[in-house]
Amino acid sequence: MKNQKAILAAVFTMVFSLGAVPLRADVLFDDGGVHNVGWQINGNVIIKNDAFFNNPTIVNFIQGGRLYSYDKCYIYGSSLLNVDGGSLNDTNNIAIAYDSGQIIINDGQMNEIQFYDNSRVTVNGGVINSAYSYNSSQIVVNNGIIKGNIICYEDAQGFIFGGTLNGAPIARGNGQVNISGGTFGGTLYMGDSGGDVDAAVMEFVGTDFAINGTPVGYGEFTNGGTGEIHGTLTGTLANGDLIDNGFWIYDNSKLVLTPEPASLVLLSLGGLAMIGRGRNKLATRRT
Image 1 (cartoon, one colour):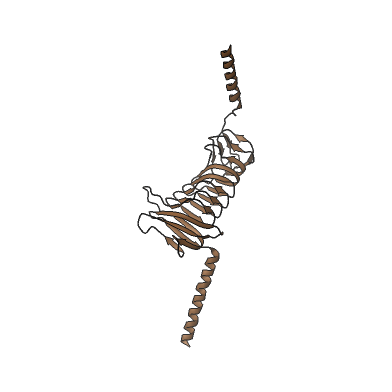
Image 2: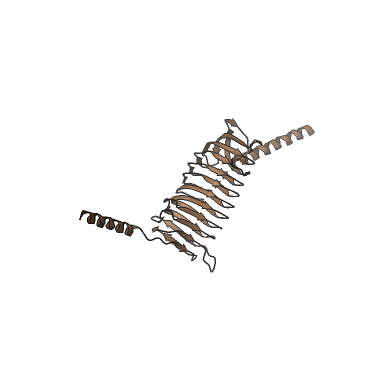
């Protein structure tokens, strides 16, 4: 009798548990319209241009919108995933953009972003665990928190104007990263210690730069043909954020320091003043 009760209890528990699991089905958005998702989707999300007129489809993950564990979101063509309060931050959630697909994060949480080809990601807010840019894709960070790294591979480009990276930007292959704001918690990498030869570029826009405590001018800094070189970069970025991070330069990669626009104007005015003084001296000599 006790065994029968135990079996019935186990069956009841199993049936109840199975009933609580939502049915899994992939969801396709491909009509060229605008869709607001404010509920949990248990399946992959696929966002594509409509097949007749190639109009982009827009999917907004708003408050309450989320993906179930392990599911992914794929964006193709010129369609758009807009995260504005929703969550794609469950276990192994990944948003992946191909072709000219776009992802915009204004608010909410995301686990991982991958983007390829000519796709574009814009981060205006929210929290992201990590971002990986490939081929000729582009990421623009204006604000928000990225818990890990931003990595630009191959010919990918990154533009960082602000925000907080608990990790750091990394450029590999021919990747390029331009930084004029933001705070970084990790080491900056230009290139890689692996077998491939990198020609990555990481450019910092600001003032008062120093390497290993020694003030330096603007220009390019390389490893000097040694294969790799390590140092610490300090300075003030164009938006006023301070940088104080270690860095590595590998292979043919380089670190570039560029004056902010205001400093560039002052440098130009200084140059004009020097030219003016030179002309005055020349005129004095002629008289």
